[in-house]
Image 1 (cartoon, one colour):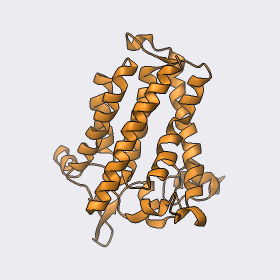
Image 2: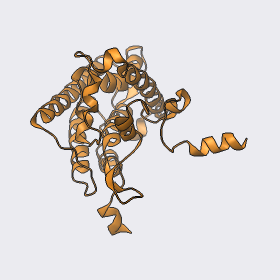
Image 3: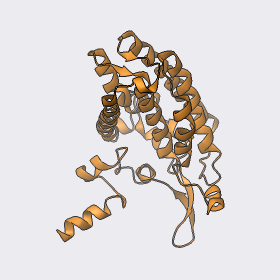
Image 4: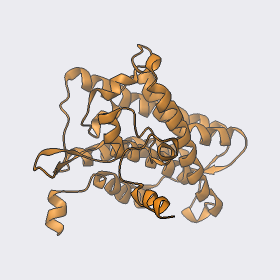
Length: 262
């Protein structure tokens, strides 16, 4: 069983390992520690996904790699600037110990996730409108070059697209709260930022699977389906897609059965 898992790790193994190794031991307590943690964590997450034995790797050209590294650099630069301005608000609060984190701030992470999901869903769906999808200034079509995605292609996108739909969408609410006088402990903000990055990278990672006819293909989560069908699964967690009617997959089969039997 263990050997089989080592040879054929599930899709999100890299994400879970990154969390398990980084978060319990190296979670920053001060703003000065946040940026090194984030940049090293991103690199570590990509490395773990890259070296998983059961990956379905995408073929990258030199131009693809240039775009990816441009967006990786922008992500690191954005994090640096964001942390700086968060500190200037006076409401990014360092802690001496994790015990100093007010318990109610754990709920902030849930609020951040909900905010990110709403903004990402709306922006992503907007990015698929005809006037925006193939535009030179936003061009979400660029991100859809890869039908079979990888951890690295999560950063393959028009830089404007990456900046708005990924970075700004995720971190809008925390900054809004801090600018309006709400204290957020460093470990709480870091946990969300780090979780957003690893989830983003992990959602693009594909594993090798065999279908019912014995054909080898890429397998993954809802976001892989989005890359292959384009007009479904716009959100991170699929709930808004289910309510909107744009979900494609089996995640809600039990809900549908419950409705039919009611």
